Image (cartoon, rainbow, N blue to C red; front, side, top):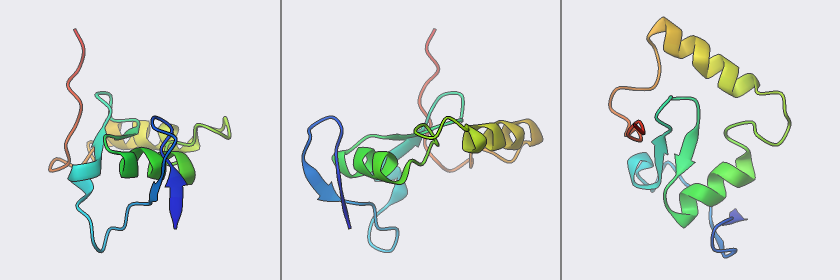
Length: 86
């Protein structure tokens, strides 16, 4: 399957966890609430699959992640995360 990279408007393959490394295409936002695509594949995957639940205005996914953060379960310690901005 493919998606459109919102930055370049190019059609690219979606992320395939069997063939690709997560950390090469994604990082967690500094607050841990959003998956951020850092490559065309990552951006297209986030957009196409609505990984951050931004298109339905329900914010269920981000609210769940906030609870996981409070519980100490999220984000995974071995996943890359954006640096917090001063």
